Structures are given as structure tokens and as C-alpha cells.
Amino acid sequence: MRNRVKEKVSIRTLQAGILLLLASSAYSAGLIDRMHSIAEQAWEEKYIPDSGVPTTPLTEYEDFEVTELFRAVTIEELEASIAGAYPMAWLEETLKDETIPWEDRYWLDRRVRAAIAQNTHTFFNPAGSPLHINADEIFPGEYYWREHLIVDPEGVYAPEDVARPVLSTDFGFTDSGYIMNPYGCRIGNIAIAENGMSLSRDASIGVYVSGLNGEFGRSDYQYYARLLYPDGSFIEIPFEDIGAYSGTISADGNVLAFFKQGAPSTGTSFVEIMDRNGQFLRRIPFDGYFEYMRKPPISSDGQYASCMVLAPGAYSAVVNCYEGENTLLTEHTGTDVTTLHCSFSPDGNFFCVGGLTKARVINLNSGSEYVYPETARRESTNDKTLVSCSNSRIVTALATLREMRDSESYLELRVYVSDSEIFSETISQERVTGLISAEVSPNGSFILVSPNSYGVGGCIKSNSFIVMSIAGRR
Image (cartoon, rainbow, N blue to C red; front, top):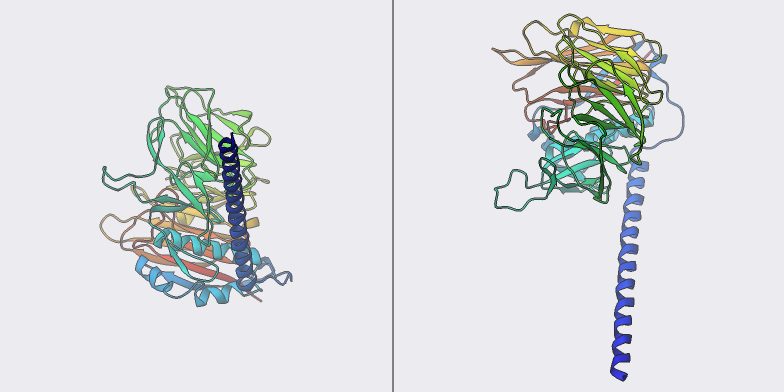
């Protein structure tokens, strides 16, 4: 009897010890997270100071100056620029300039950190020390602010006899991975790590359409809306109708839009709207057929979403996810082939139309259209234009990649303030590795020219990575 009592006491002591250890581990993990957060906040207060004094908007000026702050033509040049601690001298000076809106300086820091991580697999902690990550690919989960990056660990290209992290899907294998913040702090796991998937801005929820993966969907397969969470878990919700879907999630994570593909032989298309809890809210009918898009564009607040439409020319449709109605169908403009690369302004009021097409920007409130005829695709070419504009269309940037068959390709970069062109440059490209975008910060203070990272890994290789600033003069 006495031995049994001792045994029970011993077991209880062991259980208490385990619970204490778990509590201590949880407390330690929480303490470490808080320490990281404090260090990151201190870094921002030092390098991105905010006095609270309003800055003068660009619309108050009549003359403008575009200045190149940084350029790296190859990945080796980018690596050489970060040989010291972060931030680099030019970046530190820019981030501390309080005449520039704080929001734009914050955006620039996140964008530069993301570009370095994507191309060199290197993060910098608040002390400026580098952290190198072994990975097959690093890419953003949310593409405008890029505050969280998804890491696909090494393994996808490893020999067959080498273990790699994979998640079995309905039709094939997809790597799992993890989520890191801009300072290289691992904040969670993700069940699927595939470039082109979508995360909310705070990385609290992601979405991936599972089914028959690949470039071409199948109209006779069951597809699922897979909602992903940063603890590595997910839920899988079957769509009511059989067939292929393209899915996207708003930056605030509250609106999920799924475009049902269609064709005359397979039936009509429609849009399914879901909330972050996986509840279907409404179905928006569509008089036409949506084509496959790996990541359909959606406004930050989820009011508007867009998908390319199957048509003889290039068309894109915009739907109002709140009201459950179709808002806009773009029109063919001559030599257009496809409007595959569209986007919304940060404030969600403007729709930028790009692809193998003549570029244009459409005001979603008034219906006004701003067309840029100089970007028109030439006959029998694959000329592509990507368009980006700031809040209120203060600044618009156009990057037109002219692909030459018998000589070097070149990039035509144009910058507009309102309706006036203030800058243009032609940049030769020895070897084109994908699309090149010129993206504008929220208030138009910065333009970042880089290989478009969506779905192509975002590697610089031989293409240019350029940071430019815009300042007003009276």
C-alpha cells in the first residue's frame, strides 16, 4: 500500500512538473515574442520617425523631380549592397526624412526588406544583423505591403530519396512551409506554400483553391476552398458546383472571392463570396465566362474583385462583393490580347488594367477612364504593360516590356502625376525572366521597379531592381 501511495505521489509530482514546464515554455515563448515586438517597434521609432506633423501632398505642387535612390541590375549587385548592416545609407537617410509621408516610408522599408529576402533569402533583425534562410523560394503572402513572407523550405527540387515537407492534396503534392515577418522572426506555419496563394495582411488567414492543380482547370472535378491558418491547420470547404475556381482574399481578411470558370461547353460563370469563417454569403451571377487566374486582384477592403473574361479580345470584369453585382466590364482597345495583370489602387477607388494590352486606369466611382496610348501592344509581339497607381491616382507608373525577337528586349518606364507625364526612361534588358512592374507607394512618394514576384519567384537575375523618389517643387 505504501509503495502505491508513493507511486501516486510520484506520478502527481511528474504531472505537475510537466504542467509547470509547459507553462514555463509557453510563458517563455510569449516573453520572447514580446521582446521581439519591442525591439521591432524601437527600430521603427528610430529609423522611421513620425513627428505627427502633416506633410505636404504632391497635389500641392506644380513641378516634380524624380530621383533614383538605388539600382541593382543583378542579384550580385543587390548582395553587395547589403554587405553591411541594414538599413543601407541611402535607405536610412530616406526613411528618416519626415517631409515624406510616414506611410510611404514604412511601405518602402517593407518592400526593400521583402526584395532582399526574396532574392537573397536573407532577413535582417532589428539590430541589423543578417539571417540567411535555406529555402526553395520565399515570396509574399499579401502583395502590396509585403509585411509577411512565406518560406517554402528546401526540398522541392531535391532528389527523390531526400525527405521534403509535402502536403498531400487531391491531385498531387504541395509543399508546406512557414511565415516570417520582415525582421526574420518566424510567426507561424502554413499548410501550403505555393507562390500565388493569398494571405491577409496580418497573416491571420489565407486561402488556396485545391482540386486539380495546374495551368488548366477541369470542369468535371470537385474543387475546394481551403482556408489556411498560421498554426499550420486548415479547413476544406467543397464548392456546391463542380468545376474549377480561382480564389483570392482581401487584405483585411474579411472577404474571400471565388470566380467559377466557365465556357460555352461547360456552363456559365459566377462569383462565390465567403467570409473569414467559411460561410458562403452570396453568389453573384455573371453573363459570360471567367478564365483561370492564379490570384485574381481584389481591393484592400474586399469591396471589389476582378477576374479575366473569356472573350475574343481582352476583357476584365469587376464585381462589387458588398452589393453582389457586376460593376465593370473593360473593353477591347485595338491590339489587346489579354488583361491578365490588373490591380486596384491602395484605396480601392481605381482599377488599373494591364497585360498584353493598352494600359488604362478606371475610376470605379465615376466611371472615368484614363488611357495611355503609348503603351499599346505592337502587332505580332508579346509587349506587356503593368500599371500601378497611388491613392486618388495622384501618381501612376507604367512599365512596358517590349520583347524583341532578334535583339535585346527593353523596358519603357513612364511616371505620371495626375494627367501629366513627369518622367520616362528606356532600360535595356539582356535577358527577360518574367514580368517587370513599377509599383507606387500609397501617397506616390516612391516607385519601386522590380521583377513581378507573383508566381515567378521574384528573382532579379538579370533584370533591374530600382528605387525612385518623387518630390514636388514650387
